[in-house]
Each structure stands twice: as structure tokens, then as C-alpha cells.
Length: 135
View 1 (cartoon, rainbow, N blue to C red):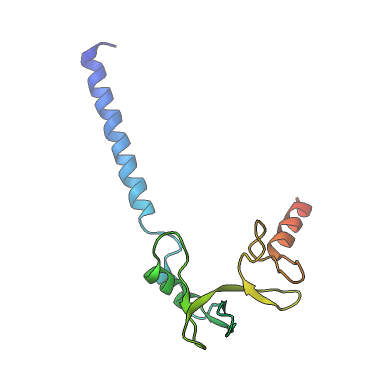
View 2 (view 1 turned 120 degrees about the vertical axis):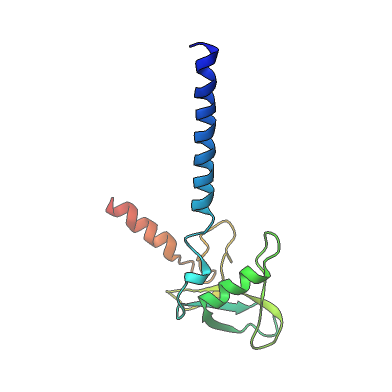
């Protein structure tokens, strides 16, 4: 192919790549987990890490994620203000389905985020084992 034919083909390829890049960017600009589309009424456990308080309660997931979105700075998860003690020391928690202990997510390092530090149960681990056994 001579230079006079290569140039339009190359320009066409560049334009096609730019169109694909614009489409991909547009499709990813709104995430499927948009907080605005969340419905109220779904609850999540939270726990106060203040040693003098240790309050445990449920709050609406939408409120929880809206707070995180408004207060996030950098890579760390911001603490919520505790409704019991007023300190910024509340984090998302998990309630163990076996023993009922409420603990902050990821209490057992390098393990499943829902691993109970008390009885060692993990719902995530159980469901993965069941998936393996079924397949």
C-alpha cells in the first residue's frame, strides 16, 4: 500500500479509537452503584470504636454511603459521628450469624472481611465453599 492510501486508513483508525474512548468514558461516568438510586430501608450495622462507648446500632445504608461520599478524603474511610457519645468513631460493622457478635468489618487481618473474631465463622467463606461443592 502506498503512502497516499495509508494516510486515510491511519486517520480512520485514530478517529475510531477516539470514538471508542469517548463512548467508554461516557458509559463509565455514572456508576451502577449510584447512591442516589439506592432505596431507603436497607440497614447496615455500625459500631463505635470509642472504648468508653462501644455503641452498636443499625442505620440506613443510603445515609451511611452519603456520609462517606460527602466526607471522604484520600483512601481512608471516614468515621461517622456516634449518636450515643458524639465522637467521630463509628465504622461499618458486621453481625455474626452464628454467635451474634457485632464487630467492625475486617477485624481479623488478612482474612474474609466478615470473619468473626469470637467464633471464627465467615458467611462469605461458607457461601464460597457451597459454590465449589455445587460445581
